[in-house]
Image (spheres, rainbow, N blue to C red):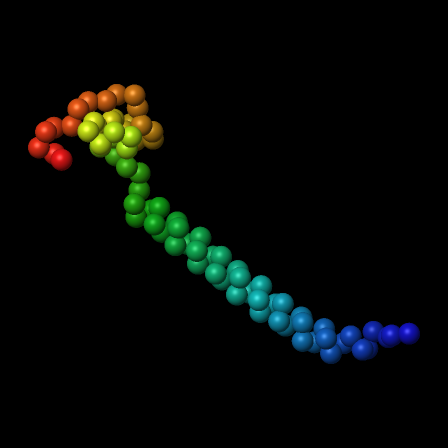
Length: 80
């Protein structure tokens, strides 16, 4: 019959290793999340206005600040 003291050295090695790995994963996760929040804050929302239509480069489509609208207009001839 195996007693628990045979597993004690294994626990001495695994416990700190698992702890260190979990700290490393947490730091990486927080760094990635912080970088995304920083990018979102720097870029901010896109202002409402007329932009090149993502579906037809020969037209402009109105962006209302949240989504593309159905309003289209032809692009100016000198803007290509």
